[in-house]
Picture 1 (cartoon, rainbow, N blue to C red):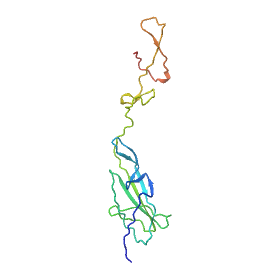
Picture 2 (spheres, rainbow, N blue to C red):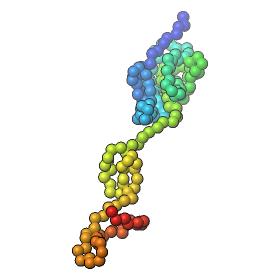
Picture 3 (cartoon, rainbow, N blue to C red):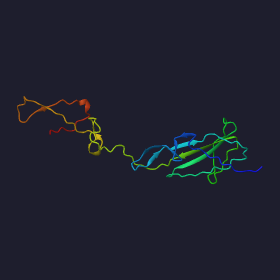
Picture 4 (tube, helix red, strand yellow):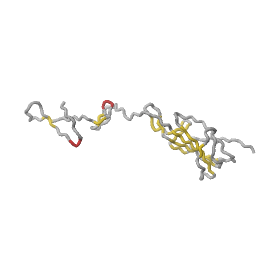
Length: 190
């Protein structure tokens, strides 16, 4: 009886996805957001596990995994295989040999492939808020004018003129709720 190699294609659109999506014919980590430069920010790790592969013929060995990998940035990946005689009891996940794609999983009736993806850590710039929208924050204790967010340090109180005042100038009075202030540094009349 002759021995021949049989290729079993993997369908990446099916299987178990964890923080990974399949689009444009490739697996990639889920994108959470974009930085200020428009670069994607992705989940730290993710994995894909194939559906169970049924081995119908008598197989003497699992030889290798052929792969076509295009990593973007400095991300990385790992490929594992597992096998089972009954779809219930599985061998431990075993990492392949990346030099030649060699598989070290024992031969059995069923097989699975697992791919783990890892994002690289790079510095990114994010602007939470540039505070350029006038009156975006309507809190009386916050000032967001001039591109800066700060606690309001100036409170304008309108006093009531005392018409019974007989000396020079005018007298204005107003009530100040002391529970709203920790300290009053100065009073300025404008």
